Image (tube, rainbow, N blue to C red; front, top):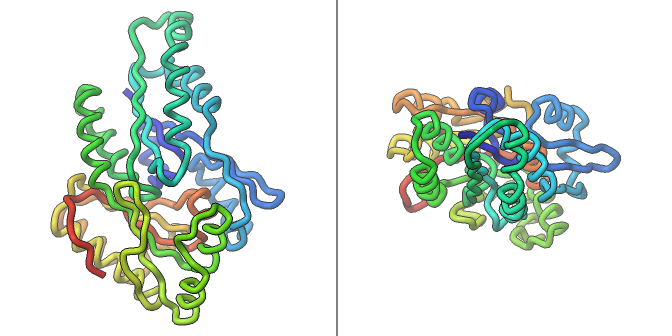
Amino acid sequence: MGLAIDASCDLPQDFLLEHDISVMPIAVRVNDSVFKDDRNPAEIDRFLRLKLGSRSHSAETEPCSVEDVQKLFLEKLVLEKDCVFCLTITATRSPIYDHVVKASFGVLKNYRQVRERAGLTGPFLMRVMDTRSLFAGTAPCVVEAARLMKANETPAAIRERLAYIAENSYGYMLPRDLYYLRARAKKKGDRSVGLFSAVLGSTLDIKPLLRGYRGETSPVGKVRGWEHGCETLFSYAADRVRAGLLVPVMCAAYGGDLAELPKLPGYDKLQQACQEHNVTLMQAPMSITGMVNVGEGAVCIGFAAEEHDVEF
């Protein structure tokens, strides 16, 4: 069995390599520069080095097409695996899920002749799942899928478990630049960050805490000051670790130099809580797609837990 994710799913490169996870790429065009967002650390570094994260709200992103997904599967994955789970960003924020579902029809129709030419017998299964979250919030589903596959669980059991984890996955984000976020949202026709809120927030240094949960993305709190916001977010994450997680992993993503993440206020307390409760704390660079959409410097955390009240 194998795993495939789209490039916006924030996970560390070493984890992707360890579990042989395929990445469905997203094309990003910023002015005269073109990036292939496939979570390649070199491309992410090039994006940051050119300082495009602060002026890329006019960028165009092209989610992996139906044809690209079919090509990945029919030229590679159907020859390497017997069953592949595709986990994508929430369908409410991106067309990627729909593209992969449409691609699956062509893959399942044509895989047999491809495998027969290679001397492979037996059926090929392709399962497409919506993580119901975004960015670091997709991590719990992917981590749990990798664990279940290693334990040789059946595809049916994996699908049932992942549906439950997706329903209880949380992705929280603290954006750094509200003006940028509003400009990007306006370009995409998303009015969730109004001009008045952006101006007021920037004037008073008030930052919103945004949550992706069960397909919905909305502000769930406000904090004054970037450093205070980081401390509030990481403190909340530490509390969730102590309360118990459905998957023993907390993923933190940062839209910048990853070496800066552990230096942010409150991160040390999150590290300590994870160590005390045997929870793996993952650090991942935010995808180029993520930085284009929410701005450079954003902080994101993702975990899976039972439904609970949010208090900020």
